[in-house]
Length: 372
Image (cartoon, rainbow, N blue to C red; front, side):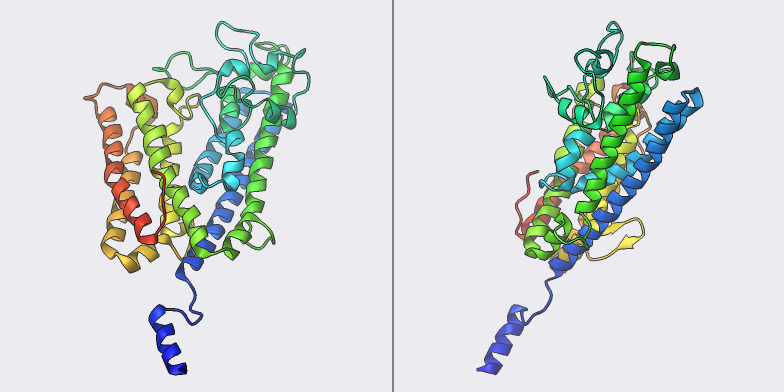
């Protein structure tokens, strides 16, 4: 009887052998914790730049603050592959990275010098992180008061002509007695929005801490491996296809509308797209920066080496094609269809088409339903 049970146990791959999916889930949590910690580091540097600028508004100070914002974007962009399963990034994303923004909800725009919360001291007397969070989407889904893109608008200002460069907000908008009204409230708004974004992402890092009892990450590791693997698959496949391919690239390519472009005020959208694709690839390969370990790729390679090799090549091709798009992204989109810039956008879009079937194949092999 014991021999029979031992043979049966070996045939079923049981006998206490670790589930390889468990190692993948643990590695994923480690990677998301490291990635989100790097986002916090970048946002702390950004906060330092903001504080220096509002204390002494100068042209150089505004440029330094813009550069610090830009430095945080590719790090955050990689983290977005941890969305779409109601995890820590989903909880804060509405206040972290939503767009498009109705600029009139925040500040003045061309033809509306008294528009926005900044210019409404009677109706909106207190500008605090909590007050901004409470105002987000008040009266409409584009009435966004918080997050990266609200801050982006505060730093670059409105773009009046899509064919020109990024917004040209003057530093004197923040200087007492300078351009536009309510300079002090504008400084306070920039500080409050920055503090809120930093607090939100600090919370994400804590939730992904695998050593913190009761954290989302620790709970994910302790749960059934298939549950964690399902979240991982839903996250990076939705980021790759539903979000990156369709919403962030195809929509602006077809509409050619400035508001469909993610980082339209700074014209840094190409950086966002490249970071998103790198994040997708990171999750599939179980890596982030110098960290490497058990991966979804390992699981697929064990079951279907050809599919794994194909998907790896497709992801590499997509990332290379996005990198090849000449920035700014919206200029390439509105360029003539026969132009090299526009053709490179089309070429990047085309690389995602075969990836859809490959990702469905990966999900099928692992017995997971994905929504792409």
